[in-house]
Image (spheres, rainbow, N blue to C red):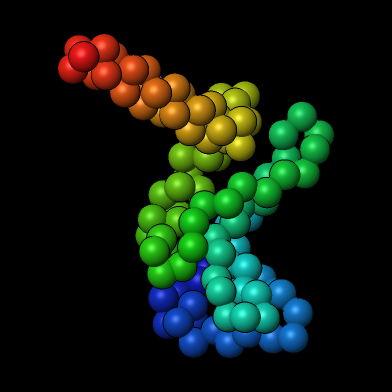
Amino acid sequence: MALTALAIRNAKPRAKPHKLADAHSLYLLITPSGAKYWRLGYRFLDKQKTLALGVWPDVGLAEARDKRDAARKLIADSVDPLIETRRRKLCAQIDATIFQGCRRGMVS
């Protein structure tokens, strides 16, 4: 059964972390401290993996589902979404470093 915004809001922490399942392997992990994390479980090259999609309420239900769908599309295209996320972050860091270096060179 699909999650609802009301069920997420009313979810209470327990002594141990627990999951509230949505559709297509998307779930909300609720920690004993009450923090709520969006996760996507998937298999890639015969290995079980977990992709972090964000923290609730910063990432709402609709956005988490959109991220899940994007990740599933990558998997269908034989791209590991975990590796793709890391690649994008690394490229952004490299671009920022190069831009700062170019900017310093122009200012000097």
